[in-house]
Length: 263
Image 1 (cartoon, one colour):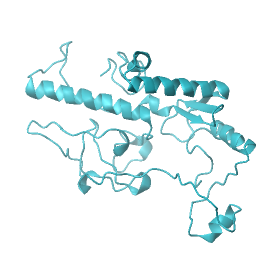
Image 2 (image 1 turned 30 degrees about the vertical axis):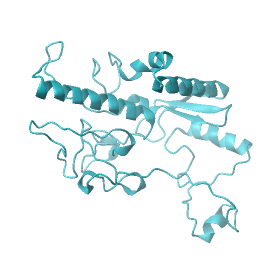
Image 3 (image 1 turned 180 degrees about the vertical axis):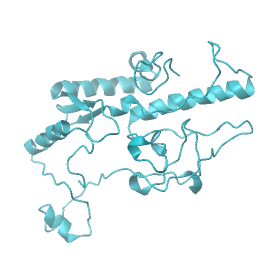
Image 4 (image 1 turned 60 degrees about the vertical axis):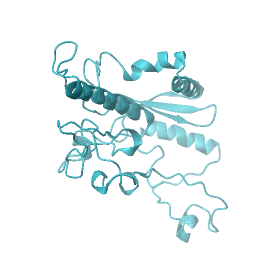
């Protein structure tokens, strides 16, 4: 790994736990090294002077947004860029910051959610930690949260433009919801075989933030419950929906960047 530890920016305690697991299983680790299959010195540096018999390559992510115009794609980012740019409402925007799919009423018609988007809203002259939305991990929770926000915005635009509804049920002006750095983006469950795992919660965009709060066999059971219930939800099962519905449809937000009274 090119980074100084496994698990990238997650807390050192979790990285140490995973490293000890790999040592027990006879897995050798090499850090502060960049993968370079064409350099013979690379293989010598990891104890394979004759090269590897077989390689399994899993290094980072890469954008596949070839269907979008270049003016809507980032010039930087994971894998060299090419991610769809979005504004605070998750609407697709151009590199100049203009809404790309604006209709005659000034509202966006096309939104970018999940892995396809840039994963942040930057601001020139500021560090990533100070951006309106710092970089968000490309994991399932933020993608689902973005989907809820984008769909609510589409519904609000429909009310404003086509039905003439200008206020919500409580009489407040109807406004599009904005995206935020979701607290669930700081939860990571790392699987270590079928009987071991570690779970980090409370992480954010600051490196080494978060707390490893569950580990060992209890965490392996936790992962099984998460997997089984999420699959059931995707299959429109009643148990999965009861467990996961309010994760993204919380009626009241007491902490985090979401609106106080939900979306």
